[in-house]
Length: 54
Image (cartoon, rainbow, N blue to C red; front, side, top):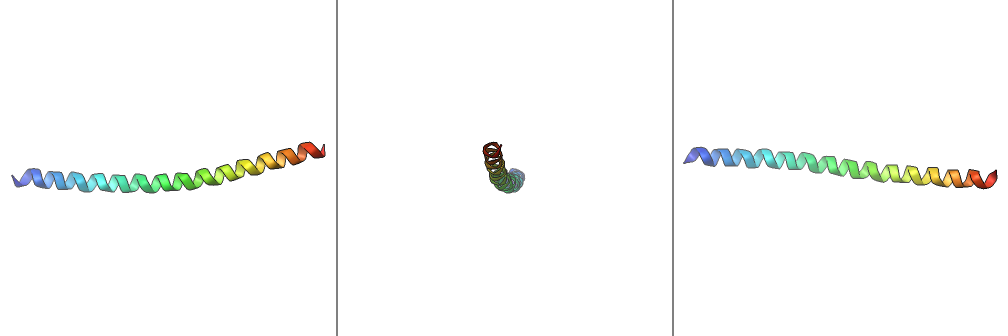
């Protein structure tokens, strides 16, 4: 009776650790995505300005 309880608690613990890890990775990727979008917008703007100059 006690063995399944320990197993379930361990599974919950490791699953929550994995969820936490994935959540932090997701947050990092969102930030990186935001940065890359800004970079793309800058490149588009720069390209438009250069096209109008020439």
